[in-house]
Length: 110
Image 1 (tube, one colour):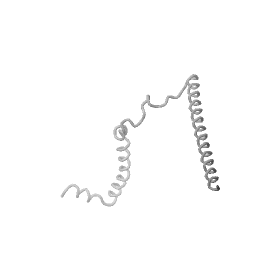
Image 2: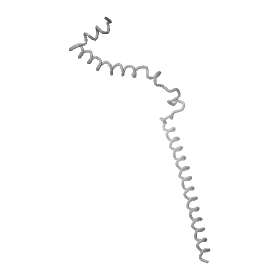
Image 3: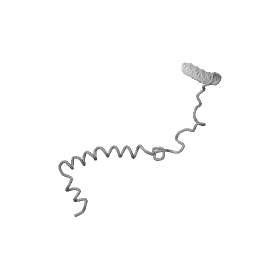
Image 4: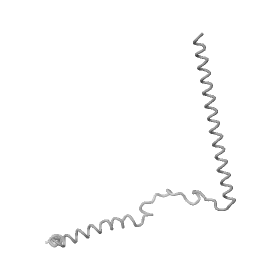
């Protein structure tokens, strides 16, 4: 007889319950241990996270904060000017289209 069949004969009654309980407890622990250790090597994608040089630098000094605020205000003003220019262009195009429509209706009436 093989040792495996002898092992299965012993798994009856209380021994089977102890084996099942051990399996129920150890399987999740083993799963968590396998996937929870050495994460940097197992699940890493090279170059995924930005390096310190690529990431943002938070201003700490008062001068740096003032410079950053000035830069942000400049960006906002440029964006505001672009938005206003687009709105003005859209309004001019709309007025031109309306004028053309009026001219066409006037020509159609004649």
